[in-house]
Image (cartoon, rainbow, N blue to C red; front, side, top):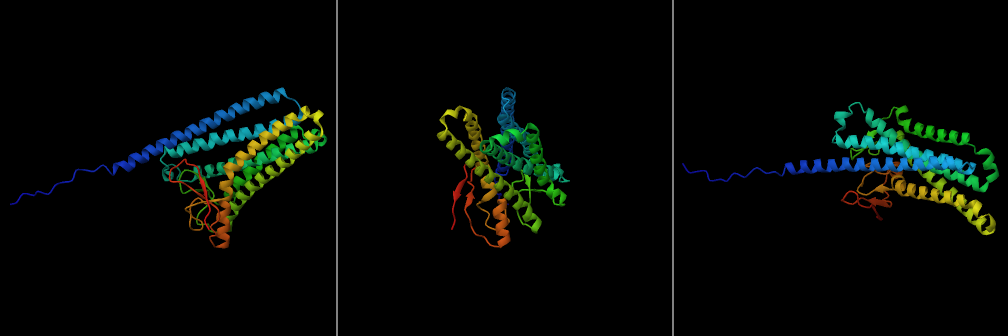
Amino acid sequence: MPLNTSKQSPPTTSGLLPNATCQTENRLSVVFSAIFMTVGILSNSLAMAILLKAYQRFRQKSKAAFLLFASGLVITDLFGHLINGAIAVFVYASNKDWIRFDRSNVLCSVFGMCMVFFGLCPLFLGSVMAVERCFGVTKPILHSTKMTSKHVKMMLAGVGLFAVFISLLPILGLRAYEIQASRTWCFYRTEHLRDWADRFYLLLFSSLGLVALGISFLCNAITGITLLRAKFKNQQHRRGRSHHFEMIIQLLAIMCVSCICWSPFLGLKPAGQEHQGRGQGCALVTLVQSLTGKSRRPLRLKQPQRSGSVWSLQSRG
């Protein structure tokens, strides 16, 4: 009998490479999420300590109101990093296996509510701070008599309760938050929209965020113009208005950061979503396309192949 001279191929390890790569990427995701969460907590804690020290040092009503609002903003951002960061680290550490650790969809609902609350509340607080500064600069006498610490705390509570109500709307309407395509976070349904309720939640979130940014821009512009006119008109009172310039610069910084962080999410749609309701499209554009039934190909965000790269704008005609 002739010998079987066929060569047996050695066992390949190509099947092990994807698993090793996925495990490495998952560990890196856990590490980066933990780092970002820690940096956010430490920076906000430092900012809170500075604000408390400044509030005890300056007892002027104009500064006291601003410092209380700023403290509310810092506390909100602090808990946002702490809660959302902790859930994100847990999801990455569990290999994004939602079926295993969240069969009842409780964690996803909590994550979705936190994403909505900690997304809208800082925008609301930034707009309220801008309105307060505009009121303090344009109507200083009325501001000094009406804007007390009690009123500021009531406004902070009102903003927080309103953000909580918006985050609870899907639960009250018997709609569950859903796991997004990346399987790392939960939010409103952003793909395969079924009825008017899915469109309503997306439109509400986008509209509230854009309105808050618009109010901040308008009030900061009015405040800045008023201060510049007063500075050139009355040079002798320049020192008395120095703290106003300091606060308006801080507000402009807050507004710029909010615009950079939220405008792409609120007003543009990531590239690669060629069909209506597919992927993690922006709420407003996804809604408009679903209502019109057409793809308008607006200005879109193109996501590079490598994660962590800067998003680039691409206009498609």
